[in-house]
Image 1 (cartoon, rainbow, N blue to C red):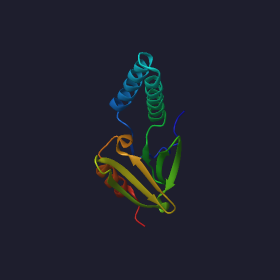
Image 2: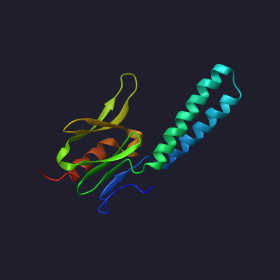
Image 3: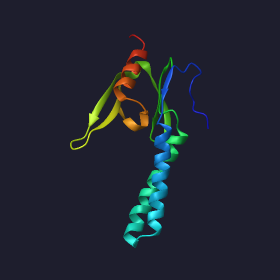
Image 4: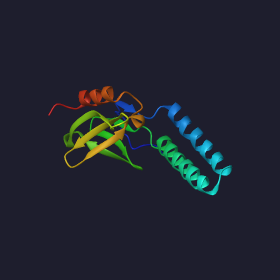
Amino acid sequence: MAPPIEPELTASWSPRPVLLAALWAGALALIAAAIFTDPAGRVLAGAGGILLIGEGARSRALRPTIALTRSGIWVVATWRRELLPWPEVTAVRAVTLGYLTRARALEIETVDRIIVLAGYRVGGDTPRVAAAIEAARPAS
């Protein structure tokens, strides 16, 4: 299914293809491990494999994760794609989350909510993506 993106697409970001391959390889490894382990391990490895298959399928089917157009930002939120019109977008910033580990994320703040996208879903350096989105925003 083609994404509902306008023809005047100016920029877009998606997960890197190597990430998709790693998700599928990890899913296969976990499912193979589920076959050759004890019952408790089967449940854990099987559930992990199914989750990786789901994430890989979502990342492959809903590309790009973020797309910029003249009318706003198309963003993938969970299993659907939605348009955030430019007047509703109040801020876009790159953040680092975590206490023991550091995970980069992209926050898109709108009038009524905040959308947080993991850095791996963006497929690029989150500070650069945030700067590019802010630069593309029309002047208010």
